[in-house]
Image 1 (cartoon, rainbow, N blue to C red):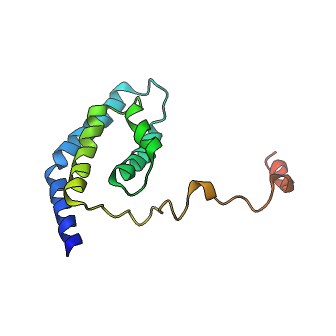
Image 2 (image 1 turned 180 degrees about the vertical axis):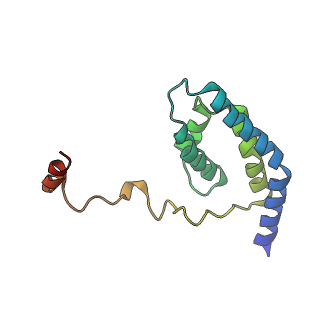
Length: 134
C-alpha cells in the first residue's frame, strides 16, 4: 500500500509539472536544430548519458562520471536540462518512488560492460573473413 501511495504521489507531481518538462525539451531540441553541431560532440551520446545521469540522481545506479560530464556537454543547454529533469527529481524526492526500468533494458548487474562476451575464436583462426571480403 505504501508503494502505491508513493507511486501515486510521484505520478501526480510528474503530470502537474509536465508542461515544465515539455518546455525544457522544446528548448533542448530547438537549440540542437538551430545551432547544429559546432562542437563536434555526437548528439547520439546525449541519450545514454542522460539515462545514466538520471539513474545516478534517482539512486538506482551510481555513476559519478556521468553526473560530472552531463552539465559540461556543449550541446546540452543547462536551463533546458534542469527543466527536463526537475519534475522527475522533485517527484522522486517528495515521494521516494523510483519508476521501474522499462522491461527491454537490462540492468547493469545483468550485463556490466566489463564482462561483455568475447568471440569464441581468436581472429587469427578466421582467415575466411579476409578472403571472403575481397
